[in-house]
Structure formats: C-alpha cells, structure tokens
Length: 417
Ligand SMILES: Cc1cc2nc3c(=O)[nH]c(=O)nc-3n(C[C@H](O)[C@H](O)[C@H](O)COP(=O)(O)O)c2cc1C
Image (cartoon, rainbow, N blue to C red; front, side, top):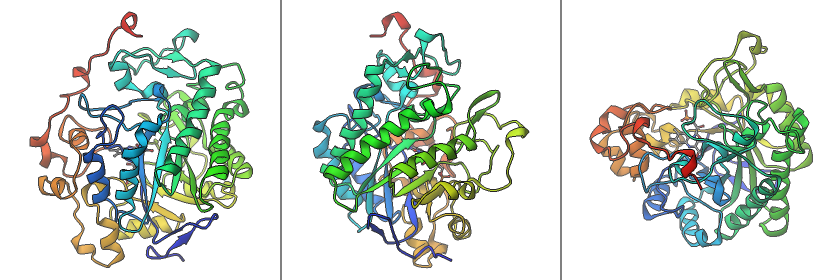
C-alpha cells in the first residue's frame, strides 16, 4: 500500500515528492485579472502544501470571468492574453520555490461569471435567455453562446495552455467541475442545445472533448515531455429535480477522454473524499433522490475502470493523518483544500510526523503567517460562507468586503452591453 511520503511518477515522467496535493482554491487577489503581490506572497506561503500545488481557476477568454468576488477590485485571475504572462511567471516561481510542482487550473466560468455581470457585461452559457432558459438562482440574465464563440473558447483553452508553458508551470488542469462552463455543457439541465454541442449525452461531451484535444495538441507541440495534464470533474450533478448527469454519464465521459488522450490525472471534485452516488456534490443544494443512490462504492472506486493509465486525485474534508491515509487507500493522490488555507504546512507536518503541530482553526495570527489574501479573508470573515472554514468566527474583525449577497447589485438587462 502506498504511503503519504511516497513519490509518484506520472505517465509522461514528472515525479511528485509525496502524495499530497493542494487543490485549486480562488484567492480573489487579482486586479483586472492580473496576479498581484498578494497572489505571489500567498502562493509562496503555500509552496510546501503538497508535492503538487494547483492554482485557483483562471479564465481563458475575456468573456470567461471574473466569477465570484467578495470585494470590488479584488477578483479572479485571468490568462486570456499574453499580457498576464510576466505576473504568472512570478506565481509559478513562488509555487515551485520549495521543489514542488506547480499546475495552473484553466477555466471558463460560463453563467457563473457574476462579477462580470456586476460590471454590466454580458454573461454566457451553452443555453440562455435567447432559448428561453432562465436560471432562477441567478440575479442576472445569461445569454446563449454562438457556435463561433464556442470555438473561440476552445482555442482560448489552447492559448491558456501555451501561456502556462511559457510562464514555467509544470502542467495544467482543465476545470470541468463545480458548475463552470465545461460542466454546463455536459449537464442536460444547463445544455438544451440542438446543434453539434448539445442533445444526446454523446453530443454534450463534444465540448469537453474538443477542449481536451486543443490542450493536448499544444502540449505535444510546445511543452516539455513531462508536462502534466489533468482534468477535474464533479462525479454527478443532481440538484433536487434538476438532473444534469449521473455518474454513469460522467464515467462515460472520462472513459472517452482517457481512451483518446493520455492525460496524467483525473481529479474528482467532491465535498467528502469517500462520497458515493447520491451524496450532494460541492455547490449542489439538494441531496439526490434515493433512486440515484445506486451503488455503495465511493466514486473513487467507481472511476477506477475508466482511468486508462491516468492517476486519480480525490479531495474533500481531509484534515488529519487518519483521513489522509484512508483517502490514499482509495486513490493515488489526496488533495487538502481548506485545511491548507488554515495551515499551509499541514502536509509538511504529517510527512515529518509532527501531527501535534497542525493548526485546526483559522486565527488572526494564522492569517498573517499564511499571507492569506484579503479576498479570501473576506470570504470567511463576512456572512456565512457556502463552504465553511473552521474558526471563521475568529477573523470577523478583518472583514472589508460585501456584507452579503443582497449588497451585490446587478445592472438591469437593458443596461447590459
Ligand atoms: C475558498 C475556496 C475556493 C475554491 N476555489 C476553487 C477553484 O478555483 N477551482 C476548483 O476547482 N475548486 C475550488 N474549490 C474547491 C476545492 O478545490 C475543494 O475541492 C473543496 O474545498 C473540498 O476540499 P476540502 O474539504 O479539502 O476543502 C474552492 C474551495 C474553497 C473552499
């Protein structure tokens, strides 16, 4: 059985020093999409958080973000133009400063680009207003992407990959999870198209497959041989009566991806590392109907037959050695998110047998030590966060952001450009 201290070599030759991964987590530290000193200091403080550290999601075309923000002027990072490369080089350098691998997560946020909506710009999705689809949970309108725009976004993923290579990242992770654009295409609830990009499950897979192909083409042409490519997916999308897809369809998609493209890893995005069919996924509000609980096996196990040589990463709720070891008995690598926000030396302490030194709650002191960004502080010091953090009540005095969703004002549709 693998141990947390064991190294791992991916199929293209890159070796990570241990089995810990820091998963992508937004820092809300960008300015007009550029990484700032705050971003760089944060990632430097996290350079020991795993053998592999993945950046927060960066948007690949101008219309792909910015998404969630808690404070005006502090936003998601972008990678849609070469102008971002000099700052991104500094981010990669900071992440790699302790000898670990730096991966850039590349994304398009689709209908979730709410900070874009606040700025009065049009927000896009596979299906929107023009096709009669309204999202009752969004306080702004969403517009249908044209075929031309879809092709530009696919190229955007390719260009973002090229920029990640130039900036010195060791790999990219394609963000196909958590309700962002790629998942919106896969979801029968969000994607009502009847052209090449929607309809049957096979057609709903055309967009993710085209994105993976575009990324792999650039990697084969321009990246070092051991460049790492991963794909992140939410194993199912079931919110109450709205069924996006089940694990039967997501495993079909991953099979299709890994049979055709030699990806290094598949990263399952889950609220609990041992989640099973029917458990609510991250950001899904409702649990699934019992008919969807059709297996007692964890997703980690259900995805094994479709990995086709890719390694598997799982995540969710890991904050001590016991859970980390249990997770490693299910997959190749274990990602630790929120515990790394609290204590970026969590992995280091476990690897050195210093478990008693692990910090389990955020405090004002930890915020300073960790170079936690103000954007991230605002997530947890304000009104209750969607994904809670232990000890959030300790940092209330540091809040500078919005007082809640109701303070976030959106222009009306006739003011949207
Ligand atoms: C503040 C915060 C920001 C996040 N941002 C991203 C992101 O940019 N991309 C992504 O794929 N997942 C994102 N996630 C999800 C995490 O990667 C992870 O899957 C989740 O937090 C569950 O792991 P944990 O229980 O170890 O925190 C975010 C989570 C948190 C708490």
